[in-house]
Image (cartoon, rainbow, N blue to C red):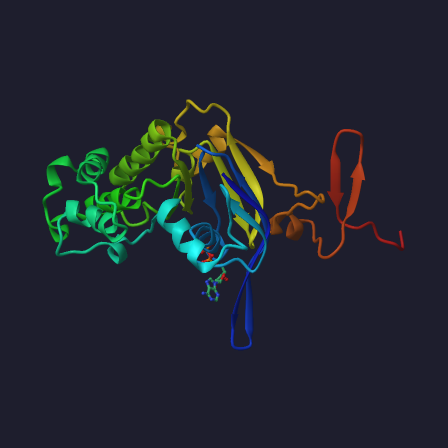
Length: 292
Ligand SMILES: Nc1ncnc2c1ncn2[C@@H]1O[C@H](COP(=O)(O)OP(=O)(O)OP(=O)(O)O)[C@@H](O)[C@H]1O
């Protein structure tokens, strides 16, 4: 579904250049539910905005289904956003209208694209557990309920790909669990591909695969050992991802990998290292002194 290779995004302002993505690789299968984690500033939102067609890549390759997002024209991009992706942000206020009911909010984007389908709008609100609240005005709903309305809206165009940027960032644990359950159900029942950006490791423990981004590059992947196991259910929050997932370092096509800064600092490795292969392992150590 998603193929990114060597993806680069540079933000330019006056005389300043910020390289937000510096050759990122990412593949996501159709029907997969996965998470992208990373520290603040690592490039997660940039990545998601590019996938959502909200931002343009600078270089590299990024394909979503049949769409090539590097070469896509402005008109095609409108079509792509309308038909292929659904987007959920942490703060839902920006795409909700407070003076309309939940149902009217879901119907609004359908009307704008001349595809009003009231039965489907109602079904969406039922899916997100708001059957009884659909005729309430937005301001009468709690933050968590509003976030669920936002999820229903993001599905109103029947997208194949759902992108969620910190979807549980401003709700409590119970609502967060509910939102993750909704994603899981949508993923299983209608086969929608779900990509969640988060820094919440307990949330990451609830998906099958987690890709970590560091300094604009994919650095590590965590793959669930037993897909039927719900990692966070045991309550060990930050450990849940390690407990349920196998950790792998990502190696790109030409053999590059990222070594965590903490490892390099611990061994005082700066710009060079020695590398040996002992038949089974590759060992990286501080450079052997040339003077012996
Ligand atoms: N519009 C922009 N103009 C200039 N620089 C930007 C812009 N958007 C992001 N950046 C920079 O790009 C880098 C990556 O930002 P991004 O928002 O993708 O990170 P993030 O991992 O999503 O962080 P956070 O978790 O804090 O949202 C940062 O250094 C950021 O300052």
